[in-house]
Amino acid sequence: QVQPMESGGGLVQAGGSLRLSCAFSGTIFSISTMGWYRQAPGKQRELVAVITSGGSTDYAGSVKGRFTISRDNAKNTAYLQMNSLKLEDTAVYYCNVHCSLISKDYWGKGTLVTVSS
Image (cartoon, rainbow, N blue to C red; front, side):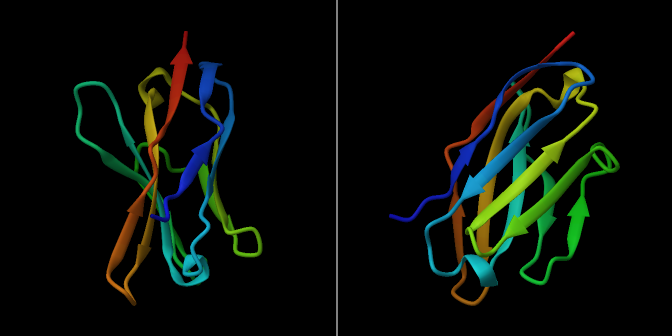
């Protein structure tokens, strides 16, 4: 079973930065939309950012201007650069690979980001 693999989570102080990575070994990476989602304790999973195969991006309003999603198709990896982190950014961050061509979604197991005061 192909599965995205997230990395880069950890503990950071408010105002700090982290970069998450999502590696995916499947051959469909370059034609897939990559998404970062997060789930805070007691809350529903929410979309943070997406990047299409063509490089178009979209962000949740709460992270716009602070987070940047990018991808490197040569490395089959997507990234989420998170700057000016806030306490409310604390969550488990999940990577999603969505390939509409084959109607498939793949989810990673998540990486925990904890922002402290």
